[in-house]
Length: 304
Image (cartoon, rainbow, N blue to C red):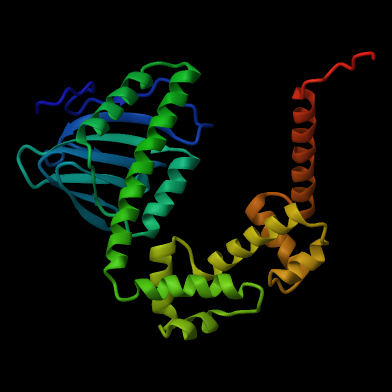
């Protein structure tokens, strides 16, 4: 193995001295292991296991799921049910990190929703450098080091999700239904003010309901209903910022069945009521105007 790895190799592991569990991404343990049968086995614990295959390939069993991991690929697993690796090559070797945090769980949910298996890594050296950097920071206990770990983990998981979504999109474009999903999106955007149903949308594209929901979620990352609600909230925000129309009138204009239903969905999406959102925007706007006026140079009047 020619790569420079700054991690204990073998059964030893590096334990993070002071993982800050408030941060959205943190690591508790990491190591570099030869995948010999029985050599690498993780007991069940909260969080997720991120594995990068340095050499060879192995079969990984986690709970009832079994997947293959090949050289230069990564895998993110829920580690609650434990993990066991069996080599497919005698030189199988991998880097691994035990992760957790609200950000990690969000990315894991997104990757899980698109049936995440192993993900090819385009730039092997970058991943190795990132993991080495995390290993270095993990040996420190200051907050800045923990923030640096959080940022680096976020970049790694963002890269994995982007690569997975790109491959899914490429597959979708080759699918005969790619244009149908695009047509469904345009139909929702054109008719969001009306009381449209899933049956209306599927009739427009002529696809069976359950197959359509699966295709839509694979391509858009959410269900048709979730997309319609998000689009209505987007239109509501534009109206709240640009008009003085009442919340009741806006609810009616964007297709919600009642003001209470609109307020409930808006608060769930934005964390604040429509009226609160409008007040906050108005306050920000007033602050910007005051700041601009303060910066405006004053011209002294001269006596004539």
